[in-house]
Image 1 (cartoon, one colour):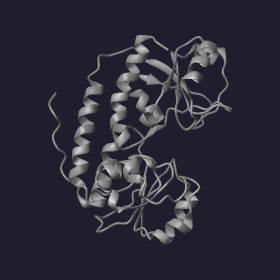
Image 2 (image 1 turned 120 degrees about the vertical axis):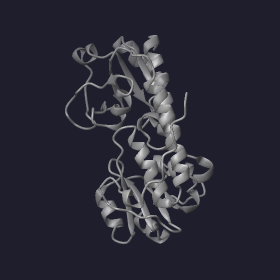
Image 3 (image 1 turned 60 degrees about the vertical axis):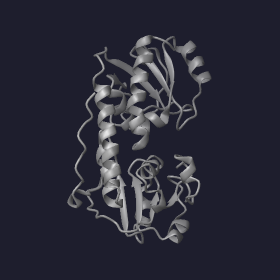
Image 4 (image 1 turned 30 degrees about the vertical axis):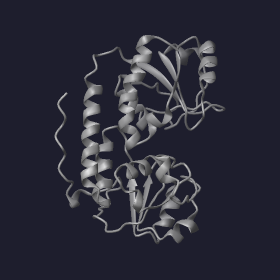
Length: 277
């Protein structure tokens, strides 16, 4: 397969985040990341030395993040600890972080970088934004080229019948994802679609013959609920349709894990087309 051309450096005028805020290349930044997947991406781009804070859920790459101070979770943030770290930049995500918390931090953190990837290819802009702001343009361009190559391999798969799958993220109560989520967009890349439930972004649902009757398979995610193979086996016996345990990080994390996620999608499709549970 021919490698895609290297992307040109992103102009400074194009360093615009998800809220349309203009950013500029930073000199010696002090970064606090409240987004686990983007913490991993920053490390992959060689920016770990500039990370002065991260959440307890920022666990990849372990060897690098262990040395970076924790500032709480993605939602229960330790405001005072962040303030003490004197960051120049705070990286946040619309889905993962609480707006009031970010607004409070914005009172004294000079630069708030807001992210909100909606579909897999949004990771290209995300990587180039991080690289452009924090001086890692070449590393970002290499990452984008690798992403394009993996994406091309995914799109080159022979056509397969469309499938309806229920992607479960929680039980007690049971919860799924709507069609406007990043996870649903990942599934759509291989022709899998989630059913329309109650209209919420992360809808609750109850099992019924009507629901099960429209499904080709059920996917149990390893996060945020820690579903296991035992859960999958029990539910498959209950429902009588294929139930698969899927890696939630591969399906929902942006950045570095999204690149691996494209290959993972090919594996998932092969699993369902193979008919095994």
